[in-house]
Image 1 (cartoon, rainbow, N blue to C red):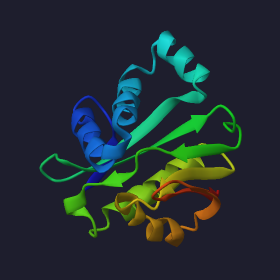
Image 2: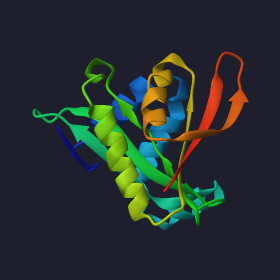
Image 3: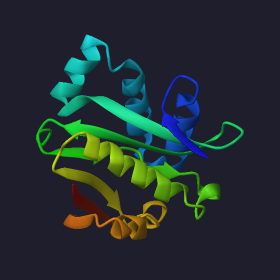
Length: 164
């Protein structure tokens, strides 16, 4: 398994995987991968800035020996805290590939890339929805502390932060 940048050869597989894992986030998954492909266009930069995001978005994929995308990760920034923080984007591992250390390698890669951004914090949000709950132990292992919890009807939204 190798970790490489998201590119034209793997973006469709990555978007399909993220859509499968985050099936309840529907349009936002597809929109994010569309923005990734078009983020150098002035119109997209302007629209993302208006929406509260700073470009570029950087994404990577874990790829198996036969070229299949096994997981995704990425970094993005919000304009509100872009001077101090970078955020984790679409971190996921294919359900059939979990428990093999792929998530661990992707998180370590993400932390390394976040440190290279020279920010004070690496932040993420996640939830207690079963598909995301499995990652909580991994976030704890790497010392992402919970900074905020929002109650939703059937789950909790968790904001986590790692001081870099």
